[in-house]
Image (tube, rainbow, N blue to C red; front, top):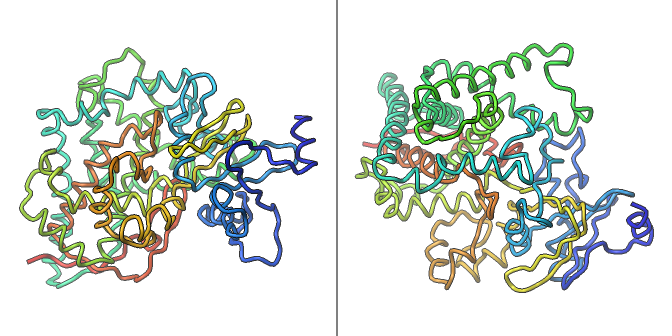
Length: 494
């Protein structure tokens, strides 16, 4: 601590290596910075602006690493490093784990999640506990397990039937009202479909659609919103149940517990994923992770699907191309999905331009040297809080733009993936980190891809839809979503 304070008094850069991050001033008057460079009760609902602040006027810094790696230090505290450098992001993610000297997941930005779900979860834990939790989740969520022909067919049929049932309701609304089009926000519809697939199809529960729509989905949404504010405002860590008043929020957390009970109950009969789950861990020992899967998977897949539909609503020509590809697909088997190249490109571009996980938090446990794929080296001092800024990294023109992919980095252009695929080693070189990367990659990646492909494919096959709002306006909390809730004019395809 003394050496850190001495270095800070002398304003010495705490990093070492071939490229040094540049310092961000805590306060800077007379500039157009969108926010202060740290969350507080008046700006925590604008996390993308906080990240943007780190790179405001970055062009004035030295070229290279200093432009894309910025840091801030409060006196006596460990530095906070924010990186939009894909090489640094990849190196840190691959050096994350439970090995000596590896990066931990930084728990500081997600304390609200820990209070809502538990500190012993796959999401929040570090070290040997994280490794144990990862082993528990590996089999039921693995690509090998999900895509076994007989098992995948079972999942695909139940998931598809759920999606078809809900789309039939929207179709019936149009027919019943004898309307050519209907304006509605797709996000609430998608959220309930995703929760139904997760709770009933995957966990094997038997909850009515109406109960999910009217009770559990709204309660879970309010819990997720509270998680963000709780991280910033509740510095004392007081649980919801011990706070005076706020009956609505307490009821929402109680509904979250009820939903967790309903997801665990089918374990005894080995329904849903429980057929593949082999562990002697008690039901109580699984509760925290089930909460994470219910809230986290719902948030991530809803974000992914709504952004994909949002982009297609703004690009009718691309929507038509996807329709031509999926109009004759009746089952979404792996071989069908593999050949749906336009749909896959839309999903990849969605994850690149508007990722659900817009930043990934890490923390260095010791002084750690990393090496980027282009052989640059950087020493990150012990205790550093690291925000890997995926949102802005994926908008870098020099990495994703015209000269590299044929399209501006800020544009939604699925065709860029065909151009990038011609590059040698493209799969490893062009990473959007949409599900994270490295040892702590999202365990529900393959399940999420399946669910979102089903929802987006079925929606495009049944409806044409155009955006009511011409602008892309994101909102961010635990994940990112379109600010307008994907408000569209929806029409039946003939």
